[in-house]
Image 1 (cartoon, one colour):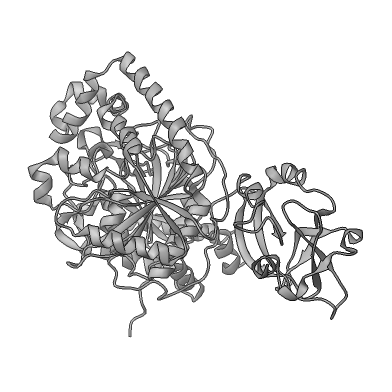
Image 2: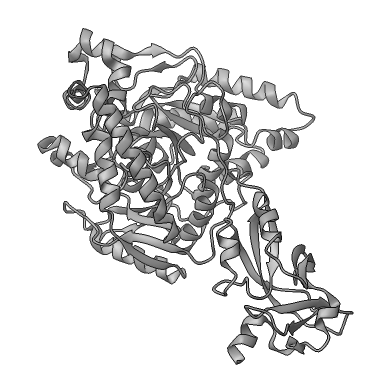
Length: 607
């Protein structure tokens, strides 16, 4: 039996560790792309000669290391094939933005592409898109109209259409897209993929043909959350050449139990049968222990209208103005009609819209006081090509219902598979988080993905088949200090807010080593326990929670801890030593020994 072709990053690493060569695997893949991959998914495929040159350059880099094993460690994406949306520059290849009249040869790599190549990845070509990344349908291109990998009569979603199709088929391990209004999320939903849209500014957009330069994000399509997160870890970071680069770090981990905001009245359309799928997804979120909080999305929808009904469309006009004036026939008619709306706005309109957006950013920020995440259908419908032909603007607008507002508000998002309709169409949900929460959002995605274990794209492979090693890297997050809490700071107890308001997240609920005793301290408000380490054989394991507290907040937290309590070293059941609450010995004289209860929460319950 022939070996299973590599799909995920761990698959490719295993293949190379076991002796396969890039020449062996990538030339075979390239031949398959030229013969079997849908031509409408690609604008440019790497030629055999170009691929040979890329492989030779990669092997030269391997030769700089003492052995192949060390080279594989130094090049985390060694020999991994990927695709690039054709509004992102790859040196030596043309960038068309799906407009032949705009075509130009890229003389250098986009910042994100350069980082991937430096990590050893190999670009297999440039993928199709809605012209100038203007659309969520994937059908506005002279290079063809990609379809969903699950239904030829239905659209692939856009604008990152070809990137999504290539990954869903398993033609490449991952692909770059761009996302201004949902272009990195809607195609993921229509092709059973992970679509990771970072916080605006987390990944440099230098080398990208802008759609809306102030909002654009490079996005990642992958078959698994771990793969998408690892790719983000490679391409993220500040870039002095990009004026909109804004690399910020947030929490590393999500809370164990989240408050997830969901639409009070979800909107659906068309014949895809999405409504019951969303109900099942909501039930899945509850089964994972999260609390669903119905919220009114009207304020978010009002923000979304600014993107295409406001002067932001003029950002698209700045990119193509000269070509539009010189050769209007070079444009897809629908794309041209969208961009020409810019002529209806003036500078006064632009400032008024900016003021409206600032008001909305301030007002919607309060949402995160009530919820930790938002959960929405990735798209409310899955149109057929005929639907787009009949109403190109209306069908497209519907697809942006739950995506258009995210970048305007500076948030991050993760589109995830959530199941299939009765007719076999993939259904996806998107989780939205505050800006800079990318690392924690991806961690949440791992749990969601593992709970469903759905097929990987349209490959027929299930999650967990093949290599299952952990990702080589993860997106950066704030440095934190793990703190073990034993009493009033436990989840749901009176002082827990001192942790959560400082951005601390629950890492795990566990026990100390069996060498501690717990006492109820008299006269404390709110009531608190004292933890004391004792000699071996004289104590017990005490229930604790370990919280990751951002280092920047440690000082203000320490200032809140009253005597006789303080932070010291606490040994956990698994042998780890972390900082945690301990008590001065003299305060325990006369205090009630409650060790037998096994923890503060159990003691309170007994009262």
